[in-house]
Image (tube, rainbow, N blue to C red; front, side, top):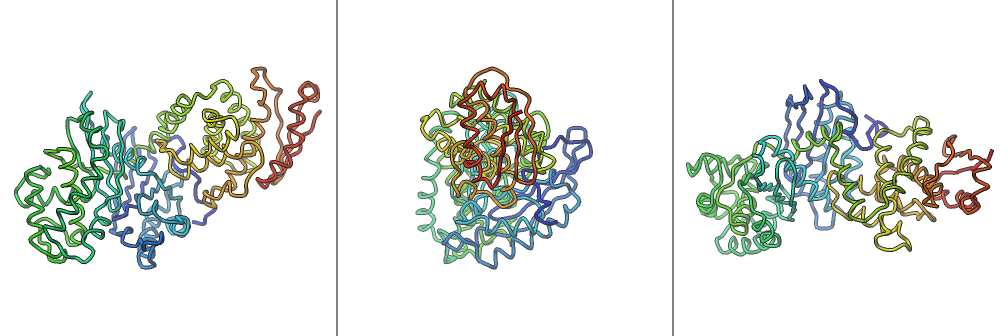
Length: 512
């Protein structure tokens, strides 16, 4: 699959019975892929693939990846891509997490990675990762009504802690401690000792203490652990006949003491522990012990699901009436006091223009959604100041944790809000991958026109618009009588061709 065939933002089209869906999790320890069939509103898993890539091992301390680990990752993604070659791009979501978040230039890895996989790869924030984890766990093990649950997920590079009710995450935290990175940080020489463990435990527990008070005050009725590390520790507890698969406050110190008897990581001998997980289990046990201490845990059951399952259910939401991104947009509008009438006017005009040029410009359904959301949020920055409010709004969108959105999606929205007025800086689209540049620039042009036409913030309707496109040249036909009655608008339109040129797009306004 060439890059032109890679979808912009996948998983947003309405689902049909029998559709295949694929979720890929580029974790810091393992890469996972789940393929499921959507049948009668339910998901039926048809295939699972997992490879222990240990991406976090490749971090070189300078914001890059070592060549060996990078190649290991690309080869794995190529195999995944072969398996889902016949799955439409709109039915595939691939998510990169902590390690890719830490790269100085994520695109240097993502560009070849997307080519190897044949699909777009999204980078998510730690809190969005937490939301997806909770969604997977909640759907795999439906919660009891009105009860809160705590979910802990220990990954290769980060640990997510979520308190949720029903299928909604209420509190989400992501800590920069994972089984791979913690093992490397505290036991880099491979030597284990009680003294070093105690020092490391205090340091890691401090990370949990940042939110322990808030979590304890909120409370929970049950605790679930997800992903491979928690599953492995649960299996060790069962193999040592300490529990039947759960992890308890009594069993965990016994596992830790047995682990430390080895003195060296290579010599660890824990019942039920696989050879591939042995090199990183020390960091995992350490993190879990710190969590138990800081949060006062007594028992943690092990979940069958993790973020990859959450991705699948999130795709169902995006393909139906429960797109979590819609809820986030409405929440932002309320939080920042955006004028809903003005937002609706700009949105309606922007989408009217979009529909006239979408086929010629090859804009897709989710490009339309992104334009709609950008139109609703274009005045976001007014909550801070009127001066340069487009810059303030873009900053909020780019740097907030917005549930349901990947980093690329937030950067896309931020670019549209940043460029909806005034001159366009050369750096406005630098954060976006190449595959999104054309649609972002074209959507920005449509938003600019819509905002200009509604600059007065008046409620009077505007005449029917006729927008024509020839390559990157737009021609907008307007009513002469209507335009003559609006000299300020006419002046704005006269200067717009010079301002919009920064998008690489030309525009003519014709009055007739």
